[in-house]
Length: 74
Image (tube, rainbow, N blue to C red; front, side, top):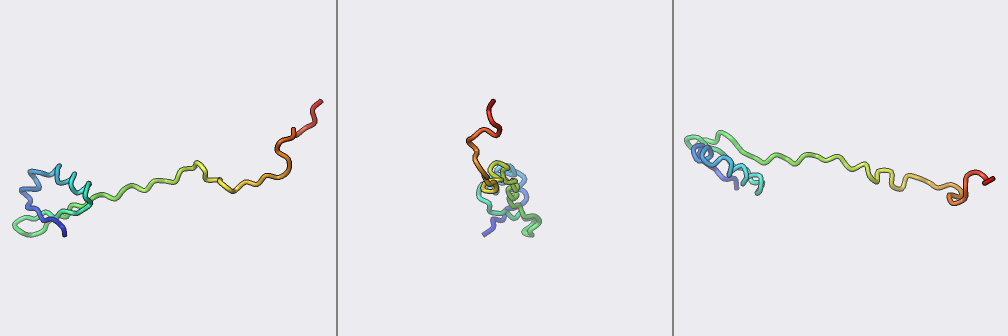
């Protein structure tokens, strides 16, 4: 259930209410004279790009001998 808070209480405790929404994820409805005027919700987490490390895993293929020298030693 969403918590309903009068605008005067929201104004007085705005920062702590924003912290509460961020921590709990539960929205708060701000009312003025009993009528809802705003809904405070937490912002979604930003989408992170996958790391490039390991992106070519299992895509390579070894052909031939990788231990011996490429050219003959002289």
